[in-house]
Image (tube, rainbow, N blue to C red; front, side, top):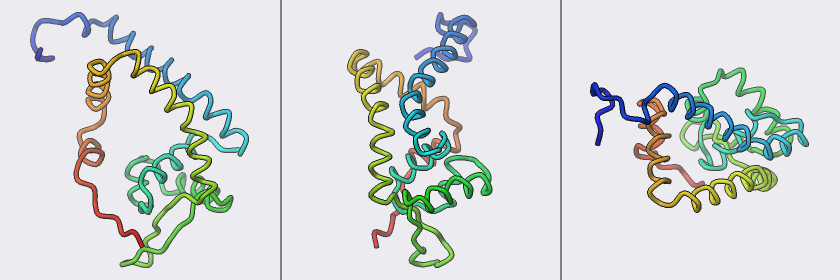
Length: 167
């Protein structure tokens, strides 16, 4: 494996290639979010709502603190978005089993349906791109994305998961 810090500059580390990678990421993100954005607009929601729905759906009964750590937003920002999702019946908050002040978040049945609607086009887009690229390219892409995540978040994302109480 080539050492990135070495004096030689592999082709993919040239300025133009790096800028192209950035540009490709912008275009991919634009298209990746287009359909979900249209669905969110039907509800008067934005991308922050989508992120909350996604992570709560992937981590049922997660705490508000865990969600704040993932999203890296202020409590005030999360409160606005989460409050709306709770009021409109897409997320429910349960009391913690050991600490009643703790709020555990979970999608409601309508929340599950909305999450599936939002992620459907994104799953299809990934499935097609992965299929066209092949296993080796997919693994390389995964490594690139992991390399872009901060070291502290890599541990949170890929480290051991705390046991969740299923009550």
